[in-house]
Image (tube, one colour):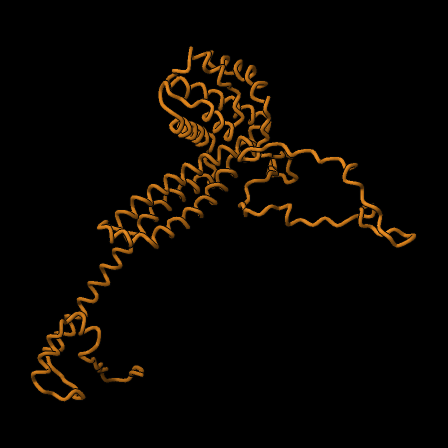
Length: 351
């Protein structure tokens, strides 16, 4: 059990067949001892053996140090990403004006959508408009843009300018309907919620990548370099998802604004969609018990059940409205109805 603070010294015995000597001393000490014909059970004290053990221990520590350095290089990739996310999150929590950040988000999201739907003079306008509708209630029509451009061969700058102007008008309308103070609070809550959710997903993706990245060595590739490269790609994708989802929720999240009862808070927001999605239909988990007038209620006279209404006489339930990715109601005539109003607002803004 070793000494318990008593005076004296400790002595350790090490076999020459131990992994430390076998792997890191190349068997030099064992070969010398074999030539000396010492009995196996005899304890040997020799400066040469002591130096061999010290050399083996030094090699082990150097090897472990290199392993730790390599692990730190992997951790450094995620640490830099964590600092970037936490810096943004801390600035929002500290009350930084987020309106300018949202304006940058809107421009970057629209730029990303434009880049994925063609180049100058060669645009897939129908697909572009469908993707834009998923982000905000677009008031532009394809025919209007083509008419103003004088044909479908429009440049990217013109198309970007028109879409950005329309999206800004839609955002200001949203702000006017909720109120400036409520809009700032909504921006803060939405961006924080999306950052937290997407960052957790990103951590899972990075852990999954790290588990299998060592197999890249079989293809004569440095696993660390591959991890750095693909980790950066995943982080860029996560940042793009944060911006796109934030803008979609800011435009389309159903929110109720009411005055708060406390003396400090001025507004209180109520809305759904910010909680983490579980992928389970809530209607499948809800239970609705029959009331006194329900079909399954027991009658007082004969103890029988009330007859069900025939299928042919039942009123068909109204079809639920078509909704987009962020819960917005999609109406077929909404775009045509908003186009003249938004066009007038855009032209007034330009003047």
